[in-house]
Amino acid sequence: MYGYMDHVLRTFYKATEWNDDNVYSHIIETSQNLIDFDLPKGCNITLSSQPTPTSCSSYTLSNNGFLNGSIFYTYCTRELDPIPASKYIPLRQTIASYRILTPLKKLIDPMYWEVWKGGVRVDTKDTLLYGRIYLPQNSVEAMIVRRLLPASQLVIKSVSDTHIKNGGAVTFTLQRNLPSYSNEYIYSTHESLVGFRGVYNFGAQQRIKDPSISSRLTIGGEIYYSILAKSPGLSAALRYTAQSAYTGTPLTMALMCNPLMGHLAAMYSLTAGGHSFGSRIEFNVYSYESDLSVGCELWRSQEKEEETTPIFSTIKASTSLKTRSLNMLWEGRFKDLLVSTGVGLTALPSQTLELSQLGVSIQYSS
Image (tube, rainbow, N blue to C red; front, top):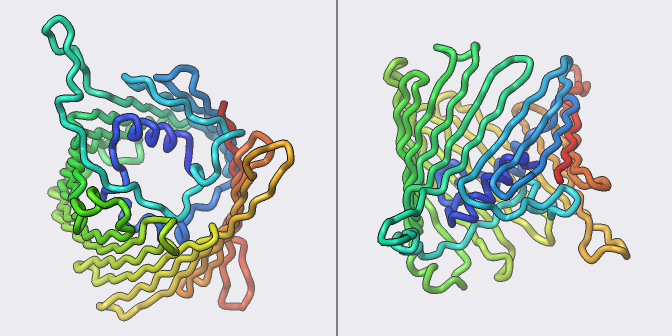
């Protein structure tokens, strides 16, 4: 289930017309949502609110064998649309599920971003500020998202923690996002890491002119190098998706490889009748190790007479032959609360099941 900060960031991207689907880090997100979903750890309670159109706050209390928590605040230079309270937000917007990609569309002309008053240009770059402190660890993380042009933005992330070398790190990411392609230039002070990521959409201009075309083929890759550790990294991916829910069964197929590690992965996901299924097969050309993972997501709706929209809940399950594990997650709404509870089981060599993880997460927002 998405956190409150995810909703804030998506609202900011929507207000500034930024397509977050068109980035390399999300190229296999559908498969990850169905197979590699996170289970809650311990007991977590989160209270969030949007007191003004430009600011949000959230408080989290967790018990994972010891008591800890976090507080975060955000501020935006422009007014954002109201984030629905936990009582009203559609669950399909808050649960990480099969991802229907945002349709490609032509960017607005940069001249429409200009605001003039008395012959002087007075417009400012839209900026989102975020800060979070973790207690009692006293670690801090922060992020700045600054829109530069309709097709570009700068993201600065930083973390201060005694467990990190030099006590913290700062990462700079310059992103350029166009309908046909997007790229990212990355630098991190941690190990002096430099990197580049990008994706290319085949036939993007045709899909802008004719939105009825329901398929999209995307290729992407990343390359990075750690100057201090003298360690390179490389990966590439190919994704085909039928993105329209009105022209047949939406499906996503993806291939990903890491040539340096010899890792190959093929993924297939589909959704029908509101339910989703995903599978992934992995193979290493150096060690000849392989793995098959599958996951599914079943939605349940319950009509209530006093409401005009159905209440939903979902059950997720995933398993892997290599790890011999079974993860199950239930997510839904109970009264005004968003609840997520899950359990992880692992098969031991003695043919018995071991409880590896159990937890519940409760979110309330107003």
